[in-house]
Image (cartoon, rainbow, N blue to C red; front, side):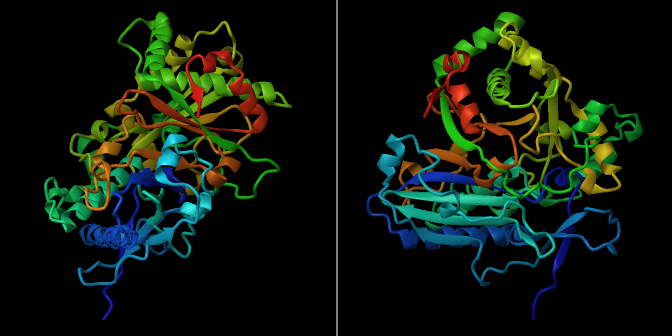
Length: 475
């Protein structure tokens, strides 16, 4: 007899994200004698153990039925059934042996180029999950080639943010290690607080804290933290434009990071700006210069930079770091485009504008913004600024502290202790629809890679920008 389906309503903050899929490619070196089939079977078994521990991860995101208590337009929910130890193994992980001339050493020597494989070769996902028929929370594929496993993983962004997916990856990896008797640091169910999967947690903590001001009193900046007050856009437009952007990786050495920091601190003095502030300032300024120079029509007077803010620690100390949901806000800085792109405007001034809005975000503001989102009557009206390729806005995700090294599959089959040597984010079809750049995780030697997408003429402008070239090299 089939177990009863469980329905879990998604939280107000979960509705900041559409039901989109962002694909992450983890490049794991393999031992010379590694057997592809054995590694895949163990990966699938470890994922099954993860689903037994966190059964809702095996489910799907749906549009909630209007008859449901507490429903409002746009409300989404997770539907799943309990996962039993001796049940079927996950269909959410696929196997593929790549037919390619690439091997791991060549990929590494060439800097793991983003165009080595087609975006659909490593993992096929829709841009948006269909929440009318159900969008899988997790989709993954283990891709094998000589000396390498490229583990491609995506999740429905409507239910998990980036830190939430990191927790899932750590549990999956540690369960893989546990299959081979390596239980050191293994994350068993009792070691993951029950609150990590509790979709009522944020609301309870918000009520208990009781510090939020009425949502009607929130200013436009606070409302913008939760995507309220912008022109409604119910879905990402999925009709490709006449031309598409191309994705390219750039590298900033540790030496150049230090030089950029010193350059920006001429404006502020030391100890005020973070590395994320200064790198974001360089990206915002130089990418808008490139776009402005290539634009056939005049761009808007102002440029808005939107940035996600991870909120677990500041929303409440009772939110565990392992909370597997969405707990972020979208901060935004605004500068006149003429000032942003002017040679007379220092990078320090741009970084200071980013730091100024970052400094405004605290527990009080988060609770005020949550109150706004809690009172939204129609979730389909919630949107972020960065959707679309026109205009002068952009989105930057800062992954400098992304803990790649904490995802450890152990040394059975894997080289490098079971840790990925590289991470790539696949833009693929997103290059048709959004203006986004990624600051990638900091390297062990201190440098950082930048993931940038631009149209051909804009990319040519960026490559010719002396200010950008002073700090960054194309890969």
